[in-house]
Amino acid sequence: MTDRTAVRTGLLTVDGATLHHEVRGEGPLLVMLPGGSADAGIYDAIAADLADRWTVATFDPRGYSRSPLDGPVTDQSPATHADDIVRLIDLLSPDGDPAALFGSSSSAVVALAALARHPGRLSRVVAHEPPVVALLPDPEAGRALFAAVREAFRRDGVAAAMTTMAAGLAPEEGEAAPGPEREAAEEAPTPEQAATFRRMHANLPFFLEHVLCPFSGYAPDLVALKASAAHLVVGVGRDSRALLPAVAAEGLARRVGAGVAEFPGGHIGLTEHPRAFAARLRDVLAAP
Image (cartoon, rainbow, N blue to C red; front, side):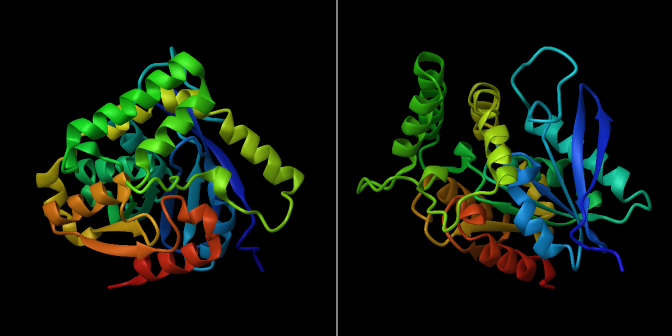
């Protein structure tokens, strides 16, 4: 009997990069997009939980970890990353069957771009808290925040940038925005988990300089998304509904007529509560 959690790795050549990808399980294809500075490793626990029902594909986005760029490092485009996803779907679903897609935070922006550009290749898209500032009540304030984060990185480094972002995303009463540093691990990480964390942490400069502003500044194709709204579910965290990404997400749902699903935890609920998050995602993906 095949071990459904066994990982099969591969490389996919796309225009301008080579993508490292990992596949587990059998069944309909589910592609999980890592957000922020994360790579495929962010989904290790969740992918194993979902591999009993889906062929779960995870990957390192272009420019991250094990997916090197072929040429100079430049600002990234959600449209280019979305086209990468469809190339991966074509590879893993050569018979043309559509795939389900999950993205969180910046990768939820990619998921929206993929649905707008390639609706026929996607059966369901779950976009968890895409921080699209164009959908905020005050878009200019959102753009100014992320520009300030990038400037803090350029001036003072990663720690200063992350502090600026946490302060900017916090509710008015001053509660710190959720982030990896707030997670309370019950057990010490294994050496493999520690190595994965270091690898993803090393992506932060690329994310802060070349991803954060172009992705948060992305203007979704609302007409195309409205036409595919039956295939779109917008996710929001139970504990982060007052924060910028969730406000933008709910604004998107209202504009295009998509459903909204609440997930455990906050903006990084998939790492705060991976088992509960996976169970909720299972229900959302399986819903008629």
